[in-house]
Length: 274
Image 1 (cartoon, rainbow, N blue to C red):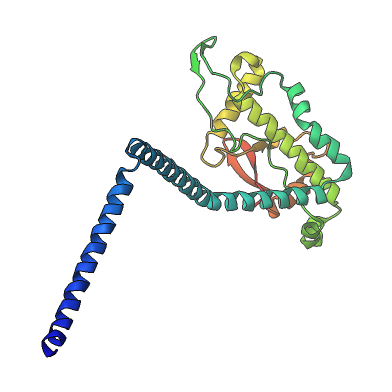
Image 2 (cartoon, rainbow, N blue to C red; image 1 turned 180 degrees about the vertical axis):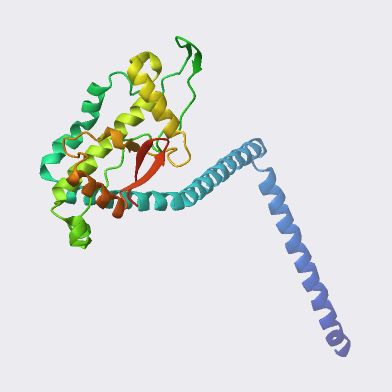
């Protein structure tokens, strides 16, 4: 009895090992069976799965690249929004301070200029070399005003006019000053078009003026800016009389124009709204 009892633990342990071994063999047999159950389709199915996974990975990469592009574009979009808001404020300022009688004139200004200087408004016109009556002149590129748009019309507000001293303001009205701003911008537009116009589209007298304006436009003080000359001031809104001189003084004081002298010309440079 004691011998049987002593053999019992050993036999039970051996039996447990055998059971575990048989169980492992059965598992291996099941795995082998599963592996060889459909040998003809297994490879094709795995290839399809691999192709699908690869395509999904490519789509995920494309989405990541697109998201990165959007993230990179956010700062540019913010700057664009800021500039748009500033431009909106400028336009609102112009509209609020523009005399009612000037609104149609403002819209018509490009047409009026095209009638004054026909066929001289193409900034992209190729400039050829040509022979003058006495000597050869090669047209050299002159710095056009930044943006290549119309001259700035930075109208003053009632508050700005009221801030001036009484002796400087005199009898000037908001409408008189803003009409003059529109008029000097028209002078500057005409000068910019003359600077860009090729000789074959100008008369001899106008060409001489255009050469003179080009020399002025090429100077460091004027390069890339809209300008007009004192000699351009001929009315009807702005004249070189007492009132006209007072208006020019106000425009200089409020930073709408800056004055300089180039040769024998008194040159006025238009400022852009900040």
